[in-house]
Length: 285
Image 1: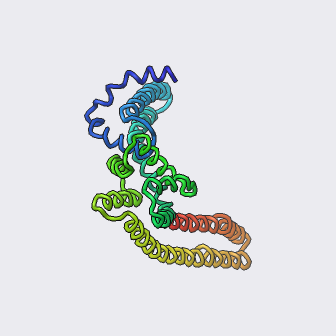
Image 2: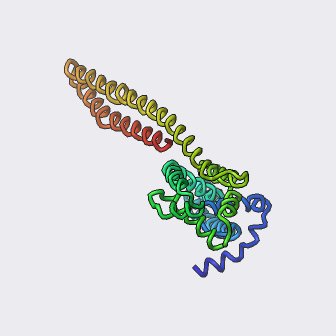
Image 3: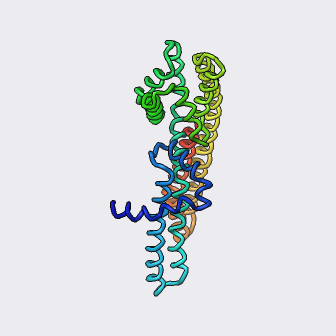
């Protein structure tokens, strides 16, 4: 590890590349939202250090392999470090987006929790502390803990922390819109409780509409499953079975193979596909 840190230190110049300079602030914001606890220049330096090691290794391996194989092998191996470099620059954004999606999955439960807490006339910091303790909210609880810790460590007002939190990302999510609304309500002099209750009511109405759409989608998938995955393969099996009975032995054997193909491949594959589509639809909800 110390050897790599020493090697990495020679790549500090990489942060001054023009295309890196244009993206370094966005990378830092994504690292913050993803809670990776890294500085952008340190992350970029590590990316370029590993890229250089991969590039050197790929060149050596490519030259060894092209003694026996076509040059296409060499070109394919050389592409690998550049793919890693591209993924390395995209990874903080992907991880930040994934984290926000996980937070949004629990936003409905959290909004109900916020609405109940707001009726107790407690402060926003105390609300976030309660959400932090409620581990059933998963990633959202962790995010609330981070905000509470930042407010206490920096001895700042929680709304100032929320404002800084919004400024450190370019990502879009329902959670960030909720935080933006809280900050705006505070600046306009509105009561946070009224805003939370209104957002919860709107969110519940939207979820009712989304639930109706989900049930329609699942009903459609059920019809597809019955007609295509069950009825149609069973009809084919019936046809092949009759052909096997009334036809010559060679055709009968072929019919048996078709029956096995439909029974062991098409029906299970269709079932797995419909199950996967249903899962995707429910995750969207």
